[in-house]
Amino acid sequence: MQERSSVGELAEQLRRELDRYSPGGKLPSSRALVERFRVSPVTVSRALAQLAAEGLVVTRPGAGAFRARPRTTAATTVGDTSWQEVALSADGAADLVPRSVDASGVLVSLAAPAPGVIEFNGGYLHPSLQPERAMSAALARAGRRPGAWGRPPMEGLPELREWFARGIGGPGGGVTAAEVLISSGGQTALTTALRALAPPGAPVLVESPTYPGMLAIARAAGLRPVPVPVDAEGVRPSLLADAFRATGARVFVCQPLFQNPTGAVLAPERRGEVLGIARAVGAFVVEDDFVRRLVHEDAGPVPRPLAADDPDGVVVHVGSLTKATSPSFRVSALAARGPVLERLRAIQVVDTFFVPRPLQEAALELVGSPAWSRHLRAISAELKERRDVMTAALRLGLPELSLPHIPMGGYHLWLRLPDGADELALTAAALRAGVAITPGRPYFSAEPSAGHIRLSFAAVTGAGEIAEGVRRLRAAYDEVAPAHVPREVRATLG
Image (cartoon, rainbow, N blue to C red):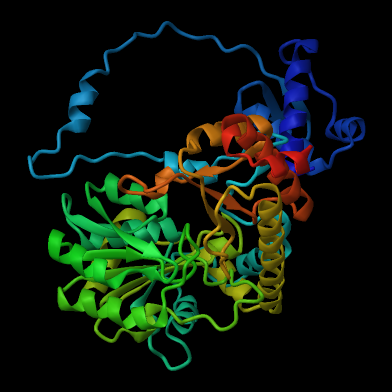
């Protein structure tokens, strides 16, 4: 059982039993709970912490856990907050795009499903794939470094900037440490980039489909996302040029490597063309290189970042360690050259000051250890195996769903539904069947041409859970779209 499922189940059991104790009464010791429920001490500690956060118990170091006493609530005045609707919708200028802060597309992959639900909607590695021991050891070593708890340079530790620069520009030094800023995760870096490059109300070109979190960033900043279609070889240059001409945009956001959600890689002949189109109109290309370290074992050599082939400062590059480590290991890099670098630096300082030094030191310790390369090799093999298991299971159990592209990197598959199939109904039915999936609509900034779903194979325990998840998805599909099920498939499934 997953640790977090055990925590939730134990917390629920203890919640039901609280009435046995009077307010202030002591609960059984942690050791007694470990023996009774046959769980780890960590699970007990986390379950009690969850109840404490809910105000149901009070924990006292060295004494144990106690049922919380009822809180006395003073009479409160009910205010009138309706004025905020006017204040929050007033943009101050008629030509600005109204801001909309909608986190739903992001929360789909961040929210943990209920216990027993298979997580096909996850956006991060399953705990069993995360380098937990290596990260813990790196953090412990980092904490002992001289000055580890002091204030870091605003741009980031020089050694960490150098490490990212080598990864972005290659051994030839196409990117220098002076052109790199350390940021707090890819989402923060993307937010900084869009704020630096586009004023409120401006259009910003985006791939279609694309990462919902980026669309949320743009809309929250009052920007207007304009879609540019993607095919199996990445963004289509002719349509990109048309979009620049039609909108006057000065920013294009793309994921050239293992694009989210399609998994496409920008074709070699398109790379220079995309940069040339942007350079000709005086526009920036924001390169979101989010899964470079999740290359599958059978991928072969992958193209280097666009930033490595950009002497003119067209590309603002975003790279992160988070996807290859843990959702809480939020260390990323922004790379740019020219005057824009100072603007990026200024916005980052205003927003966050700096990334905590212990986390930067831990990142240096991690990537400099032998465990790092071993970890990357291990997840490269594991993700390839999981991709193949999920692909085979879908082809056998859900042949109605079209899989136009099998990615050679990343952690998910992008499937097209048959015409007329309702992706929201399928998503809801899947959850009832015990599997969480991601609907495709949030990945489009305009009306999609068809229904889609995205299935992650990285956030589950392994091949067995993938097979069971596809079986549950089959049942959900039969519930909402029985007309699409061929007779031979019905016979096979019994």
